[in-house]
Amino acid sequence: MDRRKFITALIGGSALSVYALNRLNAAVYQSIVTLNQKYMKDNAPDGIYWNALGDHFIFQDGLIMMNNGTVGPMPDPVFNTLIKYFKVQATNPYDCYSFFPTKKEEVRVKLAKFINADPDEVAINRNTTEGMSLVANGLDLKEGDEVLISSHEHPAGIHPWKLKEKRYGIKVKEVPLGAPPKSVDEIVNAFKNAISPRTKVISISHTVYLTGLISPVKELSELAHEHDIFLLADSAHGIGMLDLDVKKLGIDVLASSPYKWLGAPTGCGLLYVRKEVQDRIWPSIASSGWDTHKNARRFETLGQRADPLILALGEAIDFQNVIGKRRIERRVKTLAGYLKKELKSIPKVRLHTSTDLYLSGGLTAFSIEGVSPNQIVNYLREKYNIVIRTIGRERDNTHGVRVSTHVYISFKHVDMLLEGVNYLARHGA
Ligand SMILES: Cc1ncc(COP(=O)(O)O)c(C=O)c1O
Image 1 (cartoon, rainbow, N blue to C red):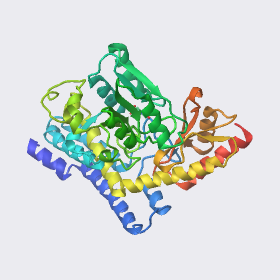
Image 2 (tube, rainbow, N blue to C red; image 1 turned 180 degrees about the vertical axis):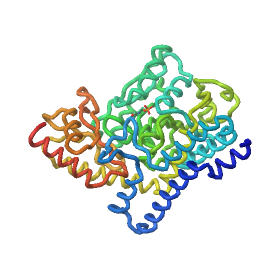
Image 3 (cartoon, rainbow, N blue to C red; image 1 turned 30 degrees about the horizontal axis):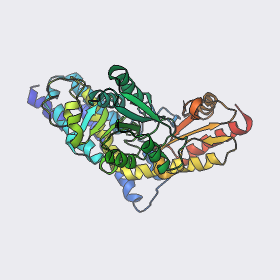
Image 4 (cartoon, protein in one colour; image 1 turned 30 degrees about the vertical axis):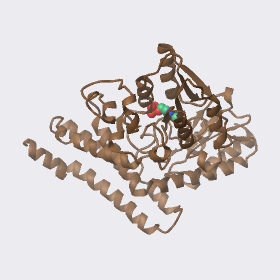
C-alpha cells in the first residue's frame, strides 16, 4: 500500500480493527447523548444516568474503585483510542507521523478550551511532578529568596524546591494548614503572615492529597499578585474532578495529571503557563524549539514521546465534554457531601476533610479511633472489593484513609463503604 492509501485507510477507517474501534466509540457517545436528552431537565440525575455512565468504564468485575490517586480508570473510548493509535503506530511507524503532529495540536486546542486557556499557554508534558520541577528549576531565584509552600504539599511540590534550596541557597518556608482548615480566611491569612520582602513564590497544592482540601487558589493568587509574587498550583487531581477555569483562578502556573480523574492514560500531563509569565521560566529539557517557540510549547521539547497517549488524552476530554464538566463536579461533590455527612454521624470517626463545598471536592479523608488505616483499607477490600488508600501522617493529624467519589461511583457503593466503617467503628477490626 502506498503512503497516501495507507493514510486514507487509517483516517477513513477501512482497516478493520481501527474501524471497529471507531464504531465502538461512536456507540458509547450515542448512548450518552441519548441519556443526556432523557435526563436533561433533571438537575441532579442519579440512578439510571450515572449507572449507565459507569458501565462505560473498564473495570474488573466487581471492583469498586474509590481511589483516584496514583492512577484512575479509563473510560472505554479512551482505551479504544489508545489501542487504535498504538496499532496505527506499530503497523506503520513512519507514515503515522504525517498526521500525529496535527492531531496532537488538536488535543492542545481541546485541552486549552477545557480549562479556559489559550492553546499557546498549554504544554502537554508527562505529569504533575515534571511540571512542578520544571517551574522550580526554571525560575531565576537568588540565594536568600523565599518560596512559601504549605505544610501539606505532596513530595512533588516539596522536593523541587528543596533541591533548589540545596543547590542555590534559596529558603523554603512551610506555612501550616489545618486538617481541615476552618475557612478561606484562615488559609489566606496564614500565607499573608508568612510573606516577607524576600518572598518570590507561593507554591501550593490546589488539590491537597493528604486531606482532600481544595485550596482557595483564587484568593491566594490575588494575595500573591498584590505582592508581586509568583503563584504555582499543584492541581494533580484537579482536571477531570473540578470544573477548572484557570483564568478565574488567576494563577500563573497549574500542573495536573489527567490520568487521575480525567480518564487519560498514564504518562501525559498538563502544564498551564500564563502567557505573561512564560519568559520568566527557563525550560529544563532542551531540544530544538526551546528558544524559538514563543509559547508554552518550549516547555515540552522532550524528544520522542509515546504519542498515542497524547491522542487518547484528547478522547478523555471528549468523553467528559459529552457529560459536561460542571455536571461532573456537581456529581462528585454530591457523593462526597453525602459521604461526609454520614461519616460525621459515626462515633469514633474523625473527618479530615472540610465540609465546605468551596474547600473540598471528590477526595474525602478520615480516621477511626482505635482502628489503623491499614485495617480499614484491608477490611473494605476483603468484604466489599472497595479500593481506598491509606494516607497522611501522625505528626499533623492527617493519618487515616482517603476515598475518591468519581462519577462511576453510586450512592449504593458509598452506603457499602459506610456500612463497613460503621462496623469497624463499633466492633474494631
Ligand atoms: C497533590 C499531588 N501532587 C502531585 C502528585 C504527583 O503526581 P504524578 O505522579 O502524577 O506526577 C500527586 C499524586 O498523587 C498528588 O496527589
